[in-house]
Image (cartoon, rainbow, N blue to C red; front, side):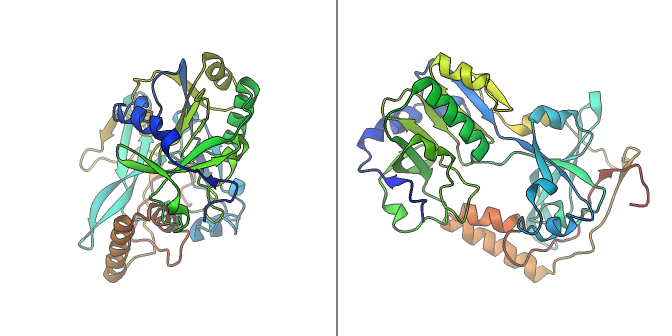
Length: 355
């Protein structure tokens, strides 16, 4: 059920301009997320994360239960540039491998070789992160959260918009209609369509931008927002690692100079920013290459039996067919029941050989 601070829009006619404008945008460009016509545009980069494992937080990593250990004791948000400066390996993206006869997505690890670029390792386990193989002393980075604007970033956006634009009426909000936790009542909201997406329309004060769309899934923000006078437009696509905002030159300058840690002024025809682009070029590991000094391989003691692997694939396909993207994401990250891992290898930097 949608957060009650968001009320169903009365109809979709006043939002039809969004559908038309985004339909004229170019795929994989800023114009596919934000309409043309604004004086300036800015990208708000969702933070990456530096993670670490200790004796204290090991249980939290293993269970995937954020309630057992405070999140700030397991990881901290960092800028994209800080990832490049870190010596820790980066766990980001996935590659498909055949495991016990079944195609499964395996996490991908990037290891920086400095001026020589990056080495790409495909970890040997299935739809899971590295939580089942980390040990105290490990440190690694992960990529940004897709499709949602962090509440602290949203508060800074609200403060800046209110200071520059002084909005005096409710705003329009839109959320993707494919989230599996939407109720039948939620799905009755008016909607608009853009290429590849359909969006449910709601009305609320701008202050609600920092509110979760649904309390049980409190990491999900509204995907789009704009005022009646169309003086600005904010978009966080469900697959995007950045939030884009178009507006007046003054608003964009103020946002770029605000306390938001990671922003970048962009052009409407720029390509969409992707965290993975920072990790290029990728150097494929040559056959039989020895790992650089300080990297070690470790196999997990946890394995999945073939029936469990088959069931995992069936669940994923069922979720995909029903549009339950949000539920699958949480289940895959270990927030559901029955989490386990197939055989895995984690490469890490270590000065201590007995870890």
